[in-house]
Image (tube, rainbow, N blue to C red; front, side, top):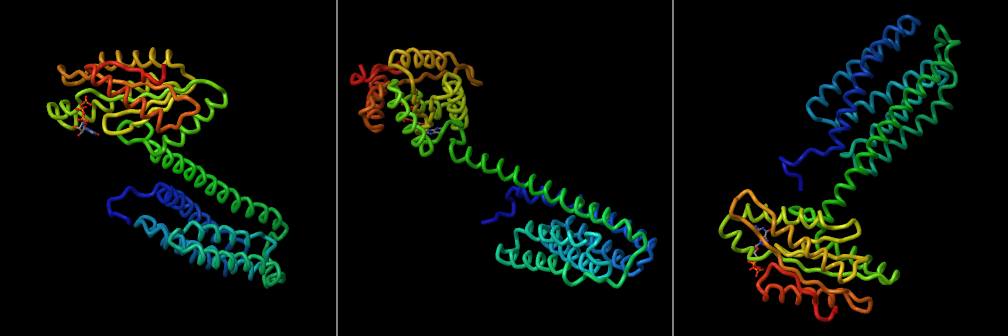
Length: 348
Ligand SMILES: Nc1nc2c(ncn2[C@@H]2O[C@H](COP(=O)(O)OP(=O)(O)OP(=O)(O)O)[C@@H](O)[C@H]2O)c(=O)[nH]1
């Protein structure tokens, strides 16, 4: 449900900004057209352009008050009516009917319009576009400088086409970026930015399959911050969060791109190390242990240590079984007095 204080939608904000620029551009364009139509003596079209300037001005005011949807509908109506009137009066030779495509695209940008309604309206506009070639072949007016009609036609097609491509391209980019952002949010834990448990399970299974195919070893490590409850109790929950965040950063620094670092629980982490032998895993985890032990925090007397349990994940074994062995090894590390690592006996 929408909350009054929710962050404004980035696509809607961008649409509003773009539309404001387009609206000012159209307002000046129509103002110029007043002069041009007076010059070529089609006074009726000059009058229509006065109405258009007023409409675009009104639309700009609506945009300034954040009425994007209403502004889009008014702009679309103006462009449709204007194109049809011009085609009725001077025919299709000048290419003004192409603005009907722009009107149709404007309506599609209105997300408050239901898709079904938008499709019906847009189809109607496109049918009108097609009809202009049939219905307005013999216009009542032949304007002065008629020989320039092909050039004006060319210009109108370009003026309609480029902004449409630009706008759709930009919205495409934002949509892709937003999808990536959502994927990152769904995959990571918000405090540590390590993978979350749910997302990591898929990664872990694929990593194990790949190691089994290539017949390379893979290790599973359970890690836990020692006496973390004391940190919370003595320094407060906020400082506790900072410790979890900084320790996670330390873990990340020691992970390769193929490794999978997961926040498994509150102060408990799972590391899956593909293409890594038991001996290599022991060496790497010992480095992490020493790095965590050497960390300093904002509170001078605060120091933390970590305990680890390492298991080799055999290709015949399920993940749950490898995890259980690593968990028991971690328990043994705790039992031995913490700040140490233990290899699961089954792995040796
Ligand atoms: N600040 C903070 N604390 C958390 C978070 N998640 C879990 N905790 C706390 O972490 C503590 C974990 O305590 P225990 O599981 O008893 O273990 P421990 O005190 O670390 O002791 P050992 O594991 O036996 O060394 C609990 O007090 C939880 O409330 C978190 O996101 N932030």
